Image 1 (cartoon, rainbow, N blue to C red):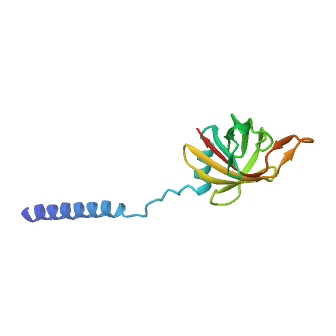
Image 2 (image 1 turned 90 degrees about the vertical axis):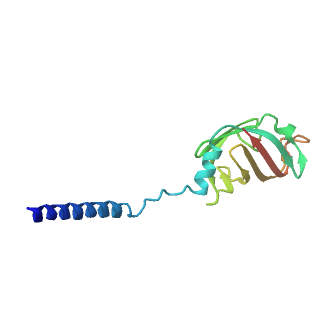
Image 3 (image 1 turned 90 degrees about the horizontal axis):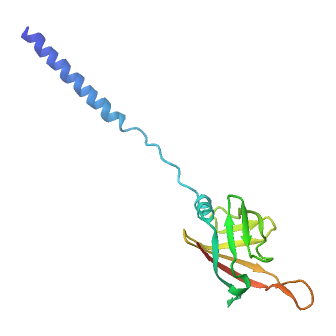
Length: 152
């Protein structure tokens, strides 16, 4: 009787050890890694998070903020809209990233715009523009290297 009691203890001990070992090994499996968002995903999320309000514009280093007073840009995943953008920022259009690093966009009109800085609260974009006139002496847009700075 005592022998059977000892055997039961041994079986219980072996069973307990096997259970602990099984549980320990089940935690050693490959961990599922969550894919990291791409540079485009991160930039798109920042661009589409709010309406961007103009804070400053320079053309060839000269302040031209008054020319684009009250300019705003709103981006969706593939489109944009603007207010007070004049000829350089049409009231609406589409866009795509021009590279995997999300450092430039290309609009549906073919204009390439560099993204010089993009954070959760600020956006700086640059583009080259040729002068646009609507007749003798009336310039619609100043030509040169434009740098647009926006905030939320």
